[in-house]
Length: 322
Image (cartoon, rainbow, N blue to C red; front, top):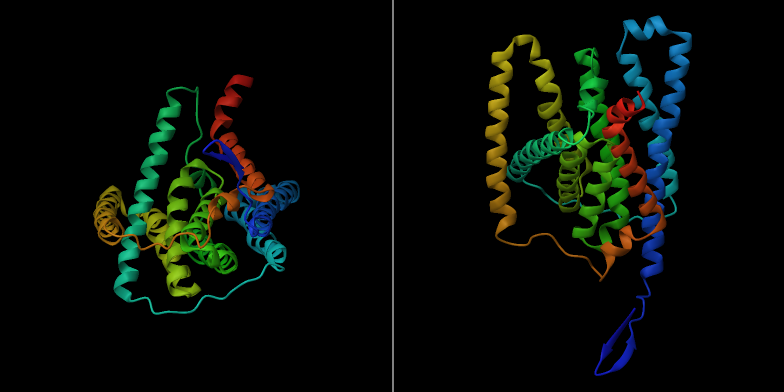
């Protein structure tokens, strides 16, 4: 890079750490790609084998298809991604106390993030529906259609929080926390949001990932992140489905309480983060640019962006082809 000063031309040298940092984050991007490919490839293969050998069983037990599409993610993708990260230096974070009051406040803030992210997704989907013949709906609801409540609980409230926090917080943040809280939170949150692979979850999952990254960086305790993630999934995902058999009154009361919690979360967010900067910036200049300006992360961003776009436009593509 060049700049001029009093008609003289000077060259700005590339920081000596640039190549190393780009390589580190490129490896992280590769690990994220491995997770995506394992879920897609192994999930597809298992689903096709099940459709061929046991179609009646799949029809009678819809939860099996959910297991076949999810278990490759947790049983193959994330362990292989861990191997990709194995050679990167990891610094364990110091464990510090995180008071119960702050944890409760962060829970309310996450509910606000969830509601705001959902509304943003619904608004964007509605705007696109005005321009396109059709857009995809909530793919999560489609995937969970007909799945027993207990299965929903196991996958959404137990398995997802544990394995996802293990990778996106513990294994990832232990390797990038040294570059500052701000870039670490951004990378962890955005990677987590894109990891879900659909527009409906993109916004709230990114915000939730940022909150969970903040919690891990400040506490150093993975179990707190797993607990907060599980509480969020229980309130924002599982509980609404579990209350459906009780009728519309119970569902309406639940939504009303969620909106109240979201308003409380907005107030708490403004109080805690609006008046002062309590997120540490990057430890060195250009870290955020280096974190995303590398081959691995660029490929991951493009891959997940195309995946989200294709899933969103698939009904319109079928309409145009038909």
